[in-house]
Amino acid sequence: IISRVTNDTEAVRELFVSVMAIFVQNIVYMIGILIALFILQPKLALLCICLLPLLALIIAVFRRYSSLAYSEIRLRLSEMNGMINEMIQGMSIVQAFRRERAVQE
Image 1 (cartoon, rainbow, N blue to C red):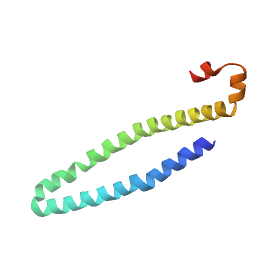
Image 2: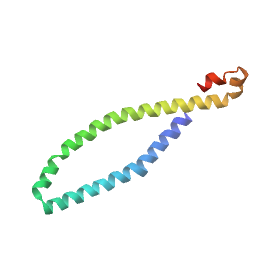
Image 3: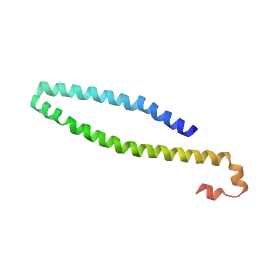
Image 4: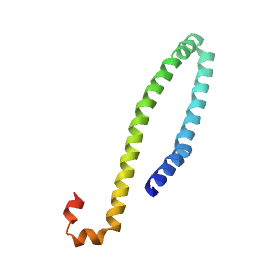
């Protein structure tokens, strides 16, 4: 449970510190680029705006598959940390039954 809470808290922190900052920065860049493009080449700007739904579709598909993979990674990390914690706490029992090699594997 502690491992899961720690990892989830770290994931939320990472979301707000890195992902949100980059997301806001990139949105500002896109708006600035589109404004400059409308000033310089309105036809090209309209073409770029027409491609935004395709970009949104690609993002949605990526988000779906990456969230599945990310949840699997978090689950395995939680299981691994739990197992390591159990082995450290039960080290004397592992040593008493001479199971160091099996635990190491």
